[in-house]
Length: 334
Image (spheres, rainbow, N blue to C red):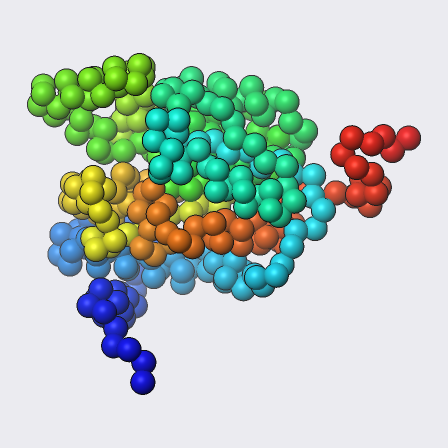
């Protein structure tokens, strides 16, 4: 006999069954932010999260991509590729390395697959506009159609602005994996800036501690008229994969729990932004059950590996030609 499920496993299982059987006329496109907020008010944030997760997995083209990723054989390998994987790190990647904000795990996975991989050294406490400039400068040095960008958290906003304002560098990018991206800012920032004076003072004191520009916060505002308020869309020719964390209340801890509870009034969220705001429109979505905004799940490295392998299998990575493959990177063909 199998061991009885824990209380949390039972809760998750029942919630998933309820979400699958509820509102059969609602598909992914139907679940607008306004409707998700209403469903959260009526049924709780965990139910709304489970419903959104379920409908993403049932809806094309996300369904086909998800099935392709989950069907990747563990022993698969990439064909020889001339791709360069560049990581746009999260904010405070230098000050808080324990959260994996520097993308070291992503770099290790990519290098294990034989890819050339490097972190773009954006200022750890830089604003969106400042870091976007650094990313554009890094892309200018790359070959056309050769780059796979992986952005983490605020790095998603940095990449978004870099590509929107850099028509000359968009052609460098073949694919963009947007992990828990703050591509539309965060309502939490509005709460910080529009809240009581002591909260604004606390924000300024925190930024001053790390000598961070106040624009780091201000450019992540969420409301109408904010720098990131317009919907982000996949640039022409760039294949975008949105990796979206979908935590239930029981999956959160510490500060993320408080943030998740605060944002719950607006709908399903990852503890830093709404799920619907972590998406670059026009890209495919891979929702990750149980992960929070910091992408804390033991399966994270394996998932990134599978996504890269799926990109290779589906032709979204440039393949090295036979002539290129017969020479070492530093060897002339002539």
